[in-house]
Length: 269
Image (cartoon, rainbow, N blue to C red; front, side):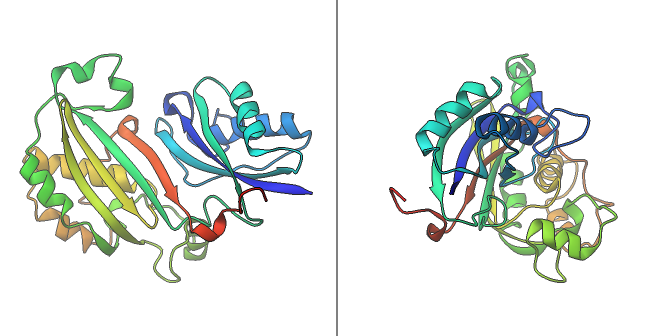
């Protein structure tokens, strides 16, 4: 017998070439699967709720895996934290129903992006965890730019284009058939912080580099390098030729994934 679990994982993205396993680079998925193999005596596949890039951090990455039934949730949490590298930490492990998949079962995802606008943002203790812009942004322009985002749009202008068939894009990302660039933004709001700004953004799904492209473009708007109305123009575009360069990865954090209540096993199951 076996049990399926969801682990909520935090990690410092500086140490990894992203979530997804790669043949010649250190990744979070490879580290998690290596520990699970040690614990279970066989290969165990770990599925992440998102596929963060190199340098991107996670505060609550959902990771699903199926292990022998002898493992309780608390014993698995302790064992993972005892063997994972210091850049990773499991907050909790929760029993899930059979067939649960951290990515495919997710109905929504949330990220935030941090920008430091004060001079101290260049500190070696802050630079790895935010975009050290070190110059002020016009808050009104940021808010007006973000107001264009809620709703369903085709984000051609805010995604990396890859030579991949539409069917493959849909299979990997959960897109609607024939609309692989379509996403529904549920929240997009800038919050003023003592030392800068934070974008809170939630959607049913995100495309590759999407949040970073959005932030890069809105920062250019906040610096008065381009008009606020460019957001509407780009949302109607079918390419990314006029989009601002993506924001650097270190300011981006995967915050959480959302799952239906039916995905969670009953207590004691």
